[in-house]
Length: 215
Image 1 (spheres, rainbow, N blue to C red):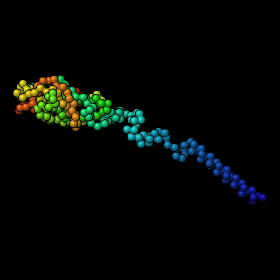
Image 2: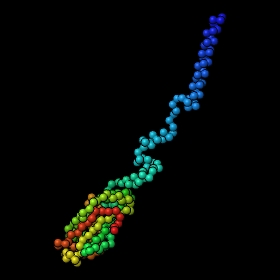
Image 3: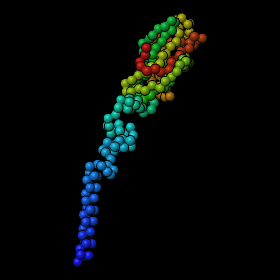
Image 4: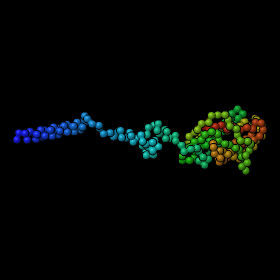
């Protein structure tokens, strides 16, 4: 009888010990003293942000920092097309024997676009016939200009005063202005009188576009 109860008692003690160890292990895990804690919410949010590109975040309305906002505002949809622009000739800015006019191109579309380089310009009579040669490009360093809706860029149109130069003149009905890299032109009424169209001092020059609407 003594031999039979002793193994049973050992088995019961062993089972009890295992149960105590299990409880201690469980308590340790709940208190954070052992085991690997689950990832925090901030870590998961960071991972999700890494996988989202800036364009998607902006489209979803996710708040961005100042640099991100500036970058987004600088994005464009390509160059400005003639059909999206309005042309105007600004006020005469006389110089020493020179006649200078700002040619202003304004973005009338609802998108942001760019212009780069020199506009085309040509004086024409009432029938549309060009008067004089194409203007020469003045030396300069063109820059790509970003035009938001309603923004403008300008180029300087200059020629020697015919009264001083003695060049042969004609009085244009209009000035055709062509945005850079475009073929279609914008017609602007010319009201500034005679322009040089022939002779040694008949050259007309145009500068590269700059931001704004003129000096």
